[in-house]
Image (tube, rainbow over all chains, first blue to last red; front, top):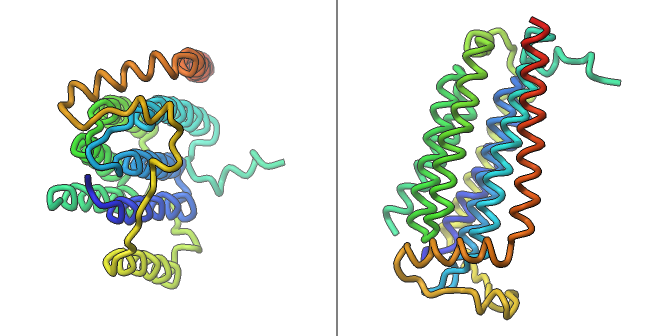
Length: 103
Length: 179
């Protein structure tokens, strides 16, 4: 059993990196990279909290994280397909130039 | 404990590289490194099935999707045309660095966190827990748990994935017809 503190610190830093990517970047692909880092942070904390009982393994969080991983993969795949369509129409990934999508 | 520190450090460094790299190809490679090191961390924590899924889906399929997107759109060349965001000034970078350093210092001072996991877990879940033995036992227990307890979730999830696949194919097909 590993101490919980280092996982919480790693998760907080990963969450911070993902949030920084979402706030500061204007490239659609980089935004998806930030979203994937956020997914990774959530999954890591979930698995870390499940291993805090000495000598025991709980299959429930592991199965939940496995399902979440598959769904995260589909989310990223659909997002990348959307990004490809956006690039085809607007010839850019820059979200500042995609103002025609606004109401 | 030292190898886990090393692996988690690699995760953080590669995630920082994925976010801050100028060239998007380097970002995707750093993301691949993040996912592979996270898979190693899951394996060391005693979650071999999660590690397998992490390596197969995130380090395999998703990174391939990213590479294909960058190749089809020449996104690596385009990144340099984008001006830096107004939020990305020195003050913001300093503030984020200060928050990160504060988190690290408070962690190193010892939060003494204790997560009383057993107090919140229901008795049914507690009875399904297994002792930390070989990885074969863990894999078998997780597979049994998935099919016996979360079977309906798996079936619904397969419909969600099917819908996502159909949507993705429809979007890409529309793209090809327009060309």
